[in-house]
Image (cartoon, rainbow, N blue to C red; front, side, top):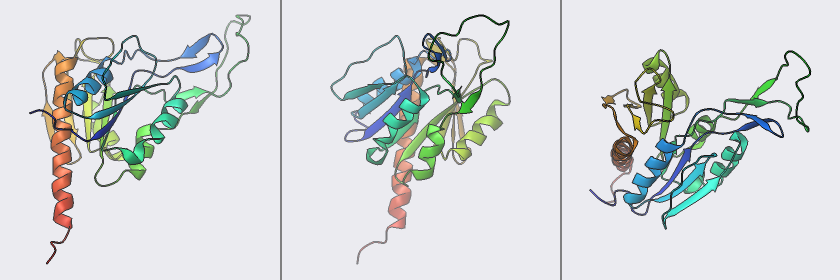
Length: 233
């Protein structure tokens, strides 16, 4: 089925963030951005206008209905996303955003004079949690949970804490899934705890599954909203 998201506006976060320690070093993670970019491509195929807020990655995507906003830090990603929240129909939080950042960024390169040194970290804003507090009844919010243990309980905890409509769970314990691979193995869990488990697939195929289930969630929310509106006489 084509054009499931025609005239819809979708924001997707993708890739890692980088938190500076000094002018030459930073703290980051292994996210390649492949999953987020694949999801963006599938939404575009379905007629959506897509805003892709991307951390630093080595991949690209072009489309007339695509706007890419390049960022580095979690703070920059948050500010970029906030500009669009009120306009959106769907938000997909696929980026691997740093939970913490150094409290102090050295103005010069830190020299290796001592046997060790300590970095004090402060908490970054939680983009998905903040959006979950303000999202409207019609907006669909999709989260990701990449877990190493207690996968299901941790994912369900995030689902409720961040007010997601559905969460995509994948485990670091699965072969050829997660950071860096061209394949992934996921489960999609809805806010009512209903769950769909998928086998190992290419990230392109996984993106199709996520987009399809997002369309189902949007249709369900639209139907529920219509039931609350009294019929005119």
